[in-house]
Every structure is written in structure tokens, then in C-alpha cells.
Length: 354
Image 1 (spheres, one colour):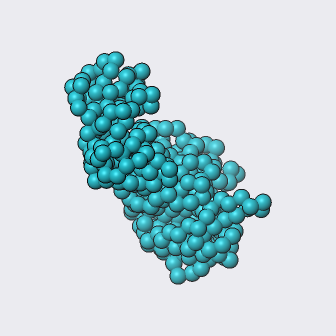
Image 2: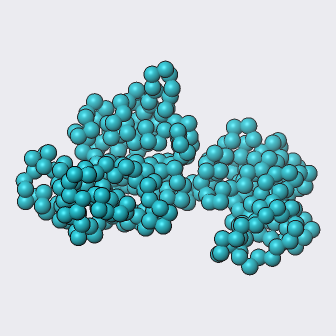
Image 3: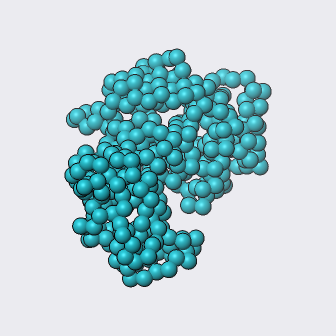
């Protein structure tokens, strides 16, 4: 096992397209770090530079004490699990698991030990003599992980490994991946665009946007104190409400109405309100939002109430038995409201602490 350190890492393609810019990141030995962001944000490129599948334009990749910029992928002591499984269709599961070890001329008994150990760990022992085409998607993904595990690498690299699975199986597999990583204690870097997957897996999140780091922190840190409008809108399901507002006279003003949110300073801001933090109050309550309801999504345990406040869209996540009307008065605790600079999108703080 080993730490991974990225120093001012960047990737620029021919023609000047900058995929990754000035990334600094220190991943501790045994840590599970998730790179998350929308398509095209640079997360897969960053992972491939760690693996050695993409050349580094500038900066340093260090695995343990070694600078690995100029090392081939096979020399970096990392194992990668791909979205496509990348299994050899003509080989059995056992042969797929053993293939990389045979290429390294490992002792036959040691290969058998590692294959059997990985198969038991992943509960694929009954399938060792089957071909990949005889397996389900989840079983194939277990084989792909087993092929990485038998190598006993310094680090695991996961490139959206669950994207090809159905929603229910993805939930099961992400739990298995997290439990497996904790059991092995191997440093892991995982790429996904699914923020729920990112939140449930990570020790720390690295939120990327346009090839740059927007925020690094634990899932709860990123959720509770997003560093920018981008992070606030990306992390959380349903997404945070982001409303154009202003600070005036020590209050937040929205659509000409002073809300019950103290805020020092003056000028345009973006007010962030998570749907689950909005609470129905009596109509006419001073400082509450007045929402005109447009439609409701029933989710069983809760209902998502969609509407508009002064021409701006708003979503409230309310209990399934919450009373509904054409108009709702909604309030939020000051400590749960977020303020961002209207121009830069940078965090100004919680409204009650601004």
C-alpha cells in the first residue's frame, strides 16, 4: 500500500485544450478518495494520469516515495477497474483472475492461493470455471475487481466501474466495494459522475469542474459547507435551490421580501436553500418564503413540492403526510441557509453567520 501525491498536475492536449489544470492532492495510505464531477470535468483524465495511461503535461505524480511520471503502467504497482469490465471472453473466470500473475511469472501455487482467496472474498467461487458471457453484470464486475485484488497492488483505481449496472445492483455493488476497501485497507481512487455514489463511498471527495478542483473535503463537509455555487448545485439530491437575492440592512431580501435570515454587508448574492431544510409554517409568517405550488412528486417516504417564489423555481422536500395547498409558506433555520457571491459564485458563509 502507498500514498498518492499530485503536485501541480496538468494535462493539455494538442491544440491547447486543457483537460486538467494545476491539481494538488495528497491521498493518504489506505484512504478512499472519490473524484466527482460532471462529464468533461477532467476526472477520468486525472485518474488515467495516475495510472500512466495518459502522459503528464506538467507536474508530478508520486506513488509512495517514487515519482512515477516516466514509468509504464505496469511499473506503477496500481490496479485499475474499468467501466467495461475488460475481461477476456475466451478465458474462464479462473484464467482471467490468474492471467496477470502468470505474465509476471509468479509461482503456480501462489497464483492459486491468490485466485482462491479473491474468489472467496468476492463470492465468485462457484463461477471460476465459467466464461464471462455466462455471468451477470454484477458477477462480471466482481471478476474485474478480483483481477485487481489478486495483484495486491499499492493502490486501486476505479473508473466509473458501476455505470453499466442497473440502479438496484449499483446500490448493492457500491456497498460491496466500500466494505472490500475497508477490509483490504488499500489506497483507492474512484471516479464517478454520480454524486450519491460519491457521497456513500468516499473518505474524502474531490469535486472537479472544468479541469480544476472546486472543493476537497469529507462528504459531510462538502454537503454542509459547499465552497461555491457549483458545488452547492452538484452535491445533494435533490439539488440545492439557488436563488438570486440581495443583502440589505442586515437582512436577506428576496423578491422584495425581507427573510428571517440575518446577513451583514450589502449587494447581490445567491441564496442557497436545500429542499430538505425548508419547513412549512403558518401563512403570513414574517420572514417566510411564499411559494406558489406548481406540481408535486410523490416519492413514498417524502414528497417533492415544486413551485415558484417571485418568478424563481423552488423545490421543497416535505414529509409524505405534509399538508398541501396552492400556496405554501416555507421557512429555514438561518444556520442552514447558504450565501454565495453573485459574481464569483464563491461561498460567503451561512446566512446566520454572515
